[in-house]
Image 1 (tube, one colour):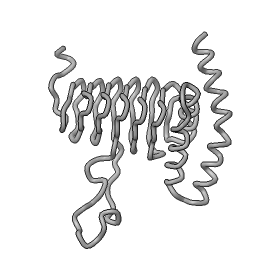
Image 2 (tube, rainbow, N blue to C red):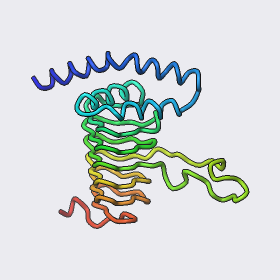
Image 3 (cartoon, rainbow, N blue to C red):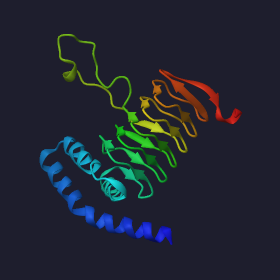
Image 4 (cartoon, one colour):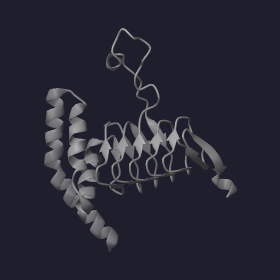
Length: 195
């Protein structure tokens, strides 16, 4: 019965969000700017409670490269790239900021987790040109299935499946599958297979 109610709510909110999505597409068509996506991401981040969760996942279902309707995207979450992917069973805590990312099935992100696209987002080699004009690299960050990323973590590299990342950790290097990592920078302290 609960699944029937959830599916019905998903359908209702998908229908309700279509005008917002169409407005987003029209503005994006005329502006040819990714900033349009940023603005709508900020807008949908502001709806509180359970209704807000339905608003966000319905909008992202239509606007992202991939977004399951079986996920939870909490209040204050901002996604900055429409190429992002959110799989089923994903939970994203409050006030997370996500760059270009692919989040595997059943992964949990605590509150205030930031995922940015690597250490080379901004080139800094030239001092005669402002940093903002030097370009950069924005590779997609991959987070495997069934991971748990603790509150306040900063993720800059890929995390393979079934990892646990301690709260306030800063991931600057790829993390192998089944690892428990923590710290600044994050280091593997144990393997989940050894527990």
